[in-house]
Image 1 (cartoon, helix red, strand yellow):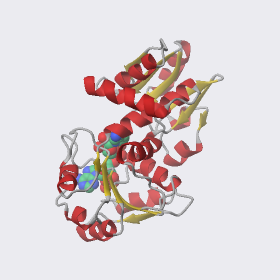
Image 2 (cartoon, rainbow, N blue to C red):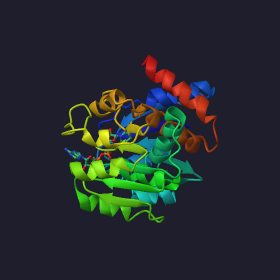
Image 3 (cartoon, protein in one colour):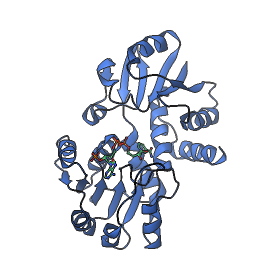
Image 4 (cartoon, rainbow, N blue to C red):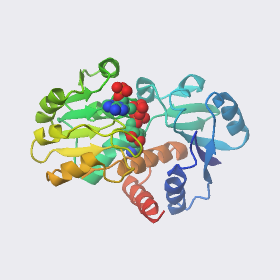
Length: 278
Ligand code: NAP
């Protein structure tokens, strides 16, 4: 038995550190390594993995969507997201899951003390991560999630996947963001804006529109504090970066790999401590 994370590029991935620490804490001698898999070669990888004792792997760019039609089964949540980040061999069948959204909700609860149940949320972005987080927030009981995106059609397409009707599309203009922020107890950035090497927000007046005490969660962890989080912190709002989500999605992935529940809090603390030392 051994585990991997596949992608291209993947050698920068923090998953080997996170999973290595959790496996060691569990006393399990199971290797976990990063493995480069080029786009278009997933079928060959699945055959190779089966022959080489890989019983679970995580997937990152560019494979999260491309894997779906190649698997023997896909969990309903991952199917509606249209992407998997965790794949396990169960009785000879490759089964896919998506733990990104669950990791985000666990991070909000564990690290920010925020339960999204009954909340109105302003969520920025409509890409792969936004879809996983928006659906997880709706599943966790959020009353309304405004999915605000530069490309409105993408937000509309995302919202159409919510069977509960709690997701609603919105534009990305300043007025729209301020109007939705005014009504929200939580704002989540799922765009690339603020990530190292990417663009920046034009202005943060939508953060001024948030009510006192509203949480601000940025999925980005490079840099550790984005300009968005720094602005929110200076306004006195509780903030959270993407690292706790990264850690918590890994805990949920490991539960799938091992097919048993873990002490999630202890595992998350173990992984976070390993990342700090790395
Ligand atoms: P993606 O699918 O490429 O989506 C990118 C999103 O950003 C889209 O909504 C896009 O809008 C928006 N965007 C990009 N440039 C923009 C700009 N200049 N102005 C306005 N909107 C812009 O990416 P993803 O996979 O969802 O990842 C998004 C972010 O989440 C990344 O920073 C990634 O590192 C982070 N992430 C973190 C974790 C974690 O565990 N913490 C996990 C997954 C992802 P359009 O639709 O209009 O193009």
